[in-house]
Image (cartoon, rainbow, N blue to C red; front, side, top):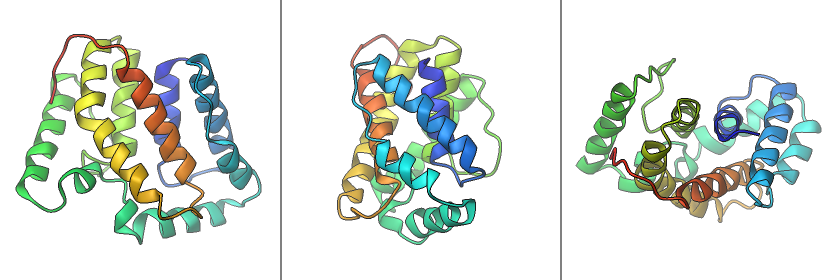
Length: 184
């Protein structure tokens, strides 16, 4: 599996659930993407949860996990900066980088929403912008994903914890090969 496919699948898996079959397929794509990088996938419990759940249950769990619990919200700026002015600077930097690379997000999400950022990483991977992508991951995405993952340590019962861990693992592996380019 390609890196772009892995990032795109993670983006969909961490977005509001729209269909069980799509999530199952995306889970398989991420597993394969990790496997091609010799990384053990943490997604087996999540895959079992999805396969055993109706869409309404997935949606209910998603909302309970991400919308009603700010400690594990998918907004990386919150995890990196809390509610201070540095978060605003971070958001501006993200939007500027999207514009510089010709990325036009669909929808109304803030630029620090993890599924949106993973979609941007997929876009950069598809366009062969490896150096820029790796720098962006290292400086703008991975630190927030690591903090989000740490926040999940107190929520052992969340089915989405392995998906956040898979995002962390893929981002960490992506930054392991340093290249030129400093977006943030």
